[in-house]
Image (tube, rainbow, N blue to C red; front, side, top):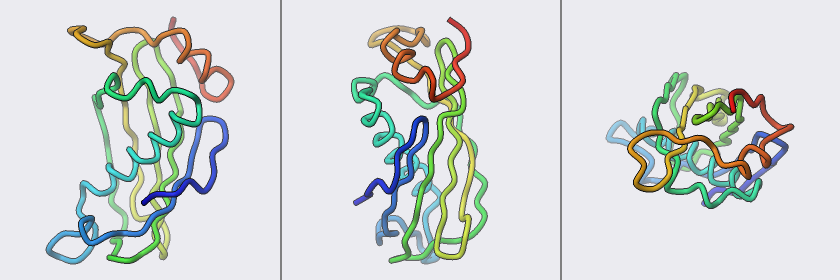
Amino acid sequence: MATPEATAGGEVTIQRLVEWHDTDAAGHQHHSAILRWVEQAEAELLRGHGLAGLFGRTPRVRHEVNYRSRLWFGETVRTRLRIVRLGRTSLRYEFTVHGESGVAADGTMVIAHVEPDAPAATPWPPEVRSALAGVVEVVGR
């Protein structure tokens, strides 16, 4: 289970252990584990801003991960996620995943806002823009 270490403004850091199901046949983290940990951090960050209602309305439209080193079963992992830009219909995160020997992965993830049954991205509701104003660069209207 992930535990938040710190939350400040537009960022959060969570800590957890690499569990058996996070590893692959080679014994280190499976590539998909990184994104699951980033999404756990995202959940903490959104909850911290009173935006849990966004779950189910924010599909991922792009992600990029740079794998720097391996993480092993039982190792403590810290995932730092930061909002860097809120656009008219999308939001960009940057993340870093640290293991016991330093940075294991870093990258970016872009999500879009989509209202239920909408065929494409929709503008962020005013309450989202309000909640994130002052903690992140807000562009577009």
